[in-house]
Image (cartoon, rainbow, N blue to C red; front, top):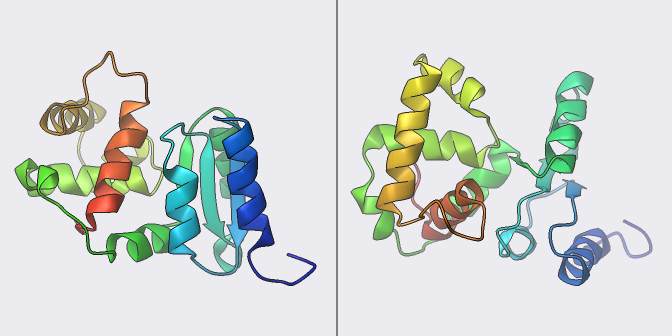
Length: 164
């Protein structure tokens, strides 16, 4: 973004969310900036998207991403997820997850809804829901938490740096 064509847009998004927690923000960037992406997601509030400009060519998908973020959801480009999971972190809490649960969590981190996860994995939505509930239980994310459990689970996954 002008004026210096560096990271002003990301810093402005972080500042805006700091002033207005939960403010829907959809970042369109040329590159994956891991530090800023983590800082944007740190609150666990949701209503956040991080897409790469060169991969946003399907207009209906882009409009769907805008609507998902505006509705409080999270949308992350798979390349953003991949870059973030290369970060070396402590995956001890994720060690309890089965391979299938890690796969579900990875697809959640890409911003997929249960329907999309079910289609990708060729399983039922009921099976996806069961996996997600197991993930929440194993990550000790109770239903009465103030945060969004789905976002908190994805943050745990991204901070651990454990690929599915």
